[in-house]
Length: 249
Image (cartoon, rainbow, N blue to C red; front, side):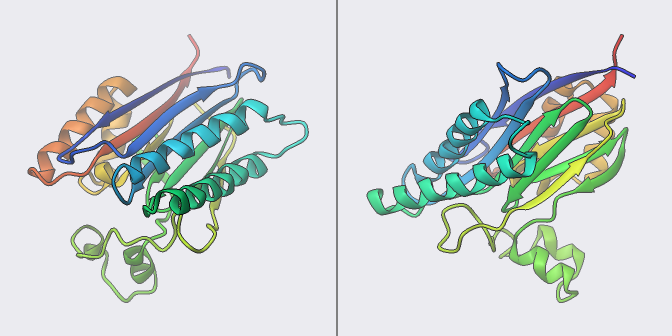
């Protein structure tokens, strides 16, 4: 059954002095039905975090513009985005004497298929209606300790080291991205990409209910407002992208 897709982005600076997140939806001028959604959460130094996140978006746009699905797999494209952005961020670190780094979640849309790659703790959620089908597993200290049973699940949102990353673009060690894919796509499938400024304050179940009940633009407004309210004046930058599939009228 033919599907229609609605895709939006939203951001809020939170209680920070600077917006260091970047998010973009890139369409292909050459490949019908292909698009790339990229979200990056930067950090480090005066303007360094914003610059690192911006570099992720620029790298993704350049590589996607030249991408040919006949000669390069989705995983190859996504891996190249991760590794090339990392190299440039490392070079900027040397030139600027800052310590920039960034997370990345990049999702490639093609007809009836979605592929993604990520590094860090920016997340991708896949819902069917309100039901969570999958989400990415953070490259963070708290995620590692929860997986190994050393810390209880409750520590995810309250441990003082919950935002310590084991991997990020710009770190000394080259990133090792994780990959995922979903196919076939069905009406009711919704993909949410977001920074920790959202998921740290809104539960997975709440995300699913809002995304199922509302169109993407309204859902984004509700979710951002919920995160802002619960942050109680201590909130991080909030960034998200929503891609929702429905039956074509």
